[in-house]
Image: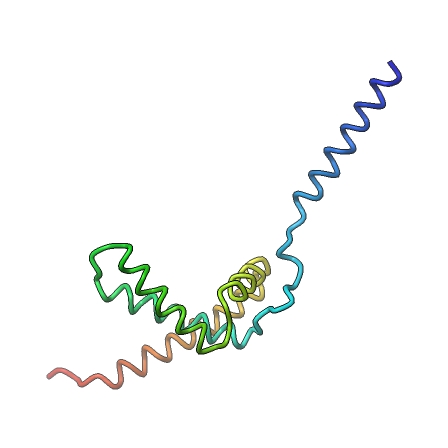
Length: 127
């Protein structure tokens, strides 16, 4: 009887420890190669422009759209000297810190609006 009580406490302790370890978010740890916020803003701005370009191509299949997007994405990563793993780890890190991600996307939105306004002003006016 004494042994059963010990086993039940041991199981509770093991399950509690397992749950605590499972619930700890690894994204809270700052990655070694975290992309700086300013650079992340530049990259995300370019990524959203690339997504828009691919959506306007009206490609027949989802596969074709994915291939076109991946090509543009690789060009963006080369331009900013980052790799896919570095980008994903940074995106996950910033996503797990909502205040940082909000600040980043405010800047991205601002830049996209500026770019749209510039594009509209360059288009000839129809009479």
